[in-house]
Image: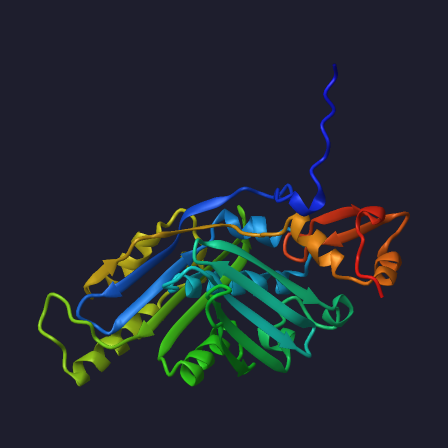
Length: 318
């Protein structure tokens, strides 16, 4: 007797599409300065940047902006104290009307940028993030799951680049002094992206005598000067370990390294999720979507097209 294997129904098919199964073990390295009001994270996406960014055939300026956004989001997500995700979203009237990156507490990272190719053609290759985004807003969202209230901070898009825009968010919404440096570029090994995030916090003590207010302020200013010496080449160099880079900056300032966190290719799409979305559409809309009896839905994150037989999707009756 011959056994016939039946295909898994769409609503039960949780398999990932054929995308890279890639993990960067030391993608985020937290640090603080002993007895000083300084903490931060160094993010190095390494080959993960190329795997994520080359899923779409975007202009280099758009790719750089998305790479910076994903590195930044990975760094901000590393501060999560709960199970959930952190996302950065920009909506604007510029050539890049939508920019979205999110990262879970487990380091699953993804992102995409929606750009108008015709409008982009009016700019040069070195168009700024400010010009790409135009006027609009940035939303920073902490999603703690279905049972917890979602926290969101929204600020107007102000600043020359994404790092400056983020600093404006920290200053206005979080009342937090910060220093953010972002880098993304195409290298000999492919696209690379990195983020350096440093925050001024209340002094938590350490091995030495507690610092008074003036000494704490001086320690913060010193950290800013040292962080200002960072170059894009250093941030994007795979051959330069993150520990070495941080020691270059702060070896004389009581550098303490935290536990590194892994980052991974984090698109979470599946046939089951998209099948559920399709079932929510009215029947006439499904008929309109179908071409030759097939509905194709493309994940905006991984740019993979899922094909569904129209007859297998019932939809909502009018």
